[in-house]
Image 1 (cartoon, rainbow, N blue to C red):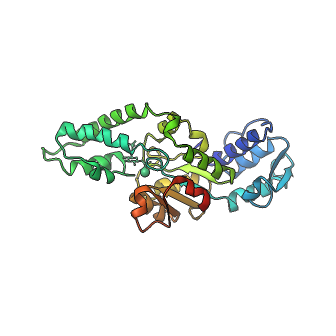
Image 2 (cartoon, rainbow, N blue to C red):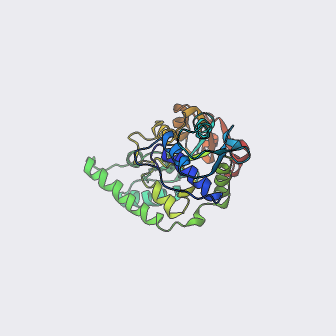
Image 3 (tube, protein in one colour):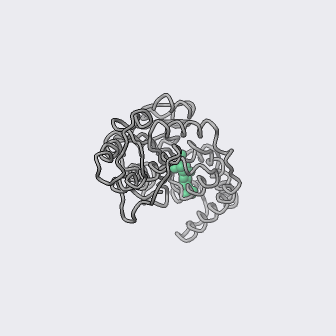
Length: 293
Ligand code: B16
Ligand code: MG
């Protein structure tokens, strides 16, 4: 999970489990990328995979000779490399509504320091990293200049409040509409990834028990530049082994839409991002993705 190549492998295993096929053996250590997919298929015994296109994955079957490098494996690799498509989801504001927790946690810090902070300023924090968020909040700070250590301490304190709030999250904090749409997109054969600026993304997915719906989860821990830089989305494409042009991004933040466009990906705006004219598509609700893709 999160390692290039493993997404393909994991998907293969998921598919076999779903179809009640037995998985024999495991992927060889060090086999990454397409090789691991082929190797995985080679270890799956009698397996059927799509021979023409990924969308044909369920209908158009070819029986695979279960050995690496056999002719049966080749169409599988071709499908993965050339015809697969990916959808990369922002987390906060798209999959879950953790924006309200960010607000509450920052508000505690701002109140303690006598800094004006409201919902309008909070809007500017969407998709922006923790330290950059702090800098935005400090624009209204009128006290003596803060050292780097003091800023770090404030960011850590805020994160403590935020993580405490995250611990209250459950599966029901992700709507049925989101879960059903993600499942439907997976069934259609799309690779799904999360592309979040948050260093807490994996905690959120674990807490809400939806981590299995994604093939890769690059987040704030895997990048050095946050949105609007395209780094996190390019990482997601790399992890699911697709070219940027094969990927679409679903985002609620302007910074995220800019990042998607800078990555060379289709940008689908939801929520506040729908007011932004750089979106390629705009959706009112998550379920509309099932019509677009
Ligand atoms: P953390 P996203 C972003 O998540 C939030 O929108 C943004 O408000 C937050 O500052 C950022 O994550 C960093 O979060 O403090 O948990 O590392 O929208 O990119 O999923
Ligand atoms: Mg967001």
